[in-house]
Image (tube, rainbow, N blue to C red; front, side):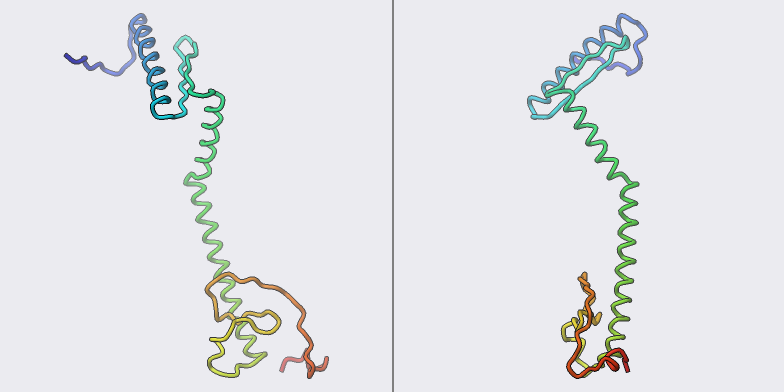
Length: 166
């Protein structure tokens, strides 16, 4: 013979309410202890009665459980939809900057063609590094490490025509 189902609502009779609270509280704390032992889980249960009395169970220290809970809540808030939206914004900014870098690399390649000329039609298959550390911009697949340096004087250049670019 099974137990009858009860309607889950506040128990009006004070004595019945207190007896039910006591039995269910003890059952809850017992289940919390069993869960921690059987499943090697870190469990903490805090119950305040209607009179304000505290009942608790902690498989380890209640302080460490509460600190862990607070840390998890902070981590969860960092990964909330708001922070995911901030991540999307950062990704969009990165894509915008990547496109700007590509445009600058193409402009740089055109300027290099004007300055150094193009000896043959297959020059885009050669290394993208030209004298003085400039990139031709033909290889746009990955990140670039750019360095600024002073151009080296060539033996055949004089100071007058070294600065005059055609």
